[in-house]
Image (cartoon, rainbow, N blue to C red; front, side, top):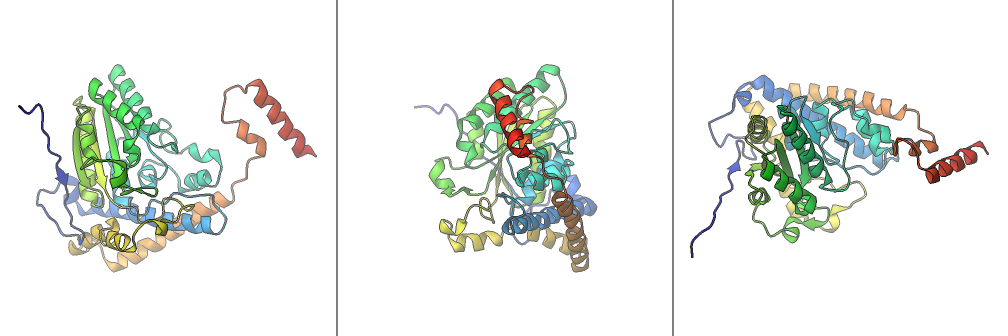
Length: 357
């Protein structure tokens, strides 16, 4: 019996959990302390925002909220590697990537506060809104990538999906199309180990999630998702090759969800305390901060000042959200159809009649 095919999945890491270099071939951006500091500052801002959003939900000022705690390196790397003309198809917790692309924190809060106007981002209008039905955003991104190829536009579509979402048919259909048509499509799997309450081991038999792209004919890579340098390097590579017509790529970012799945979840019911404690030792901010401290590019004084600045900016955004005038109830009909069907017109009229009582 002969071997029809074989494959290997490479693993990319630059910084170990303590922030020490494990390889010497630093990419150009990582050799510039100023660039690394700016990326770290963005990660820190995301964490301050995330903590504030959770507090708002706990005090009844926000609906259910999906925290991104622990994902900061992966998300900031994705957003910072993309060009403004590229298209982003996120899930519903990629705040770091979206902040880099111009989305305002107040818009994130509006969305989770139940106001659909929060999905009308200040960022690129061609980016897709949040997609709560998991993995369907992969199809949207693949469709955008097909359009770019047909139009011969040097643009790339990037989607983000979780480990659970990578087991859905939508994901497989998207990467299959990307491989068959050599589309400029980068699919990032943020493997945070848990599909809500289902561990990764219970929802796929694949040794890596990156290898799922092999069958589609895509180049695949597994990356330490808590390592900003590794994630940004992987994204730069994937986006560049896609932009120049060399096809799509699947990147698995191995990280951990340090928070509950959402504020409606209690992960203590299904996750071992020891597992979470160990994950905190590998978290992304401490890792990059330690590296910058060792390089004399950052200090405790810088850290304190920047955290205070983040708190100030986040408070401004929170106040802007809280001061936004709530839409009338009938507004729920205004963002569904260009022209309302007759039955919904009747329902809208009933709502207006009730409001006048």
